[in-house]
Image (cartoon, rainbow, N blue to C red; front, side, top):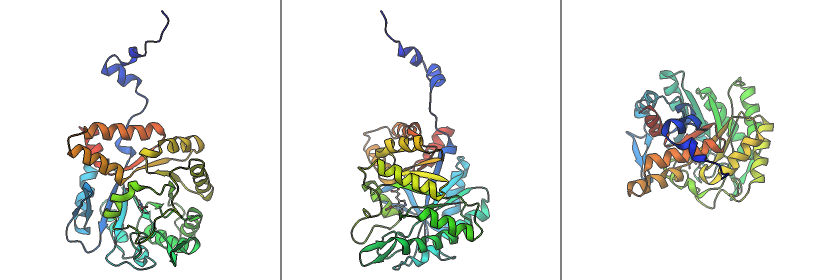
Length: 322
Ligand code: PBG
């Protein structure tokens, strides 16, 4: 009889360890943090159990508990007390994100702090750029985004992560950072950002839902794969240091495509809706949370991700330690 016995390599745990192709390490993970201005103490996000909006006052305690588990990089999102048409607070040197960056840097100079560079949490209309009527104007939005990025770098951001999905943002931010003396600050571009329904819970956490319309003129159509390659290619040409695919689970094919097209470090964003679905099913007792989380994340790495931004980062760091 001539057939292959694949089961030889699965016959016990040690044999399976020996032939395992992909692994997770705490070094793969970036922990998101939400910090809200004028908040007295942390508040749990209703649609994201276990995720909090932190007050500046309890931010360091959270960072310390992550550091204890081995997490070394964080992405910071801010919710300002005051919003306006142009998102002025996003580039305020004393804005909430800048304060959070300075505070963490002061106590933990060696951590990697990534600043999400966008306007939607800061604009009264919740769009990621500057409006003319109901249109988000590309080049005017770029000017604002550059100001935001520079102020974040001045406050100590180690990496600038622009997520507003305007054309040319990598080129504009690279030029702005270089002119301001931040030529060594890398750009982690949200290169392939789909207009996704999986961002719903984030908009509760970031208080950033658009007041009208949607983001489909600037974020990508989930149906498109070749367009994703074009977006990634132009970001790379403009000088991006990292590429990202967001969301992750419904777009693993795009992660793989980018892995095959580019030699840059590749980031998967395991977004809010992906988190909340698992949490909700686990709370019902319908799935084994830990097993489902680990299987999903290993899938992202197998698809080609080098790094994963995930609200599960802290939990996973705990699993890997224990
Ligand atoms: C800001 C931004 C968003 C997310 C990350 N940065 C929201 C959006 O585009 O509406 C979503 C992250 C998540 O869902 O976890 N533009």
